[in-house]
Image (cartoon, rainbow, N blue to C red):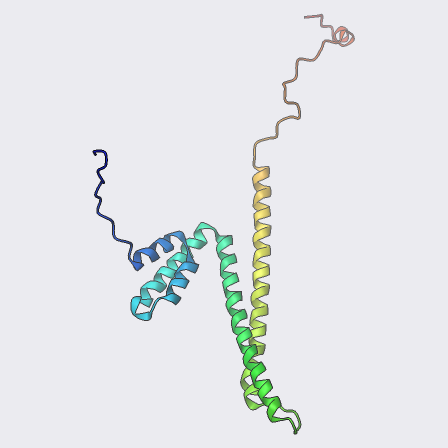
Length: 187
């Protein structure tokens, strides 16, 4: 190549959406795949293919670092359940405000919509979210105990500890009274 010459390399084309998703699959990057599904228009993706890729990404994440993957999955499930729970609460609040406005001069009562649909849904969401958080805390505690047990096992499986002295001991000094008793003379 001469000075000033520009080397002409054909530019490689950017990876396709499928190839980008495959990179995420290999990395076990579940969140990026989910974000891509949400952002893509339905005409751009084949949901069957994308969900198979998502399954493989989940498997890769669990194989690579089970504790981190489980932690991530629980956080996503809890966040989504909390979002739904607060949306149900919003609907309940709106229905209660509407019911209060209608019942200004009458005895206070709850609407049929609130009693038959919204309140049971809110209670179910509260129960579900509580159970998810308990399961998450239990799983995290179990993983912590397992990690401690593994660390303890690894510590006991290491070679014997060195003596406290860093230099080797010299031969014991001869004690004349001991050697005389044993009948051995000086060496």
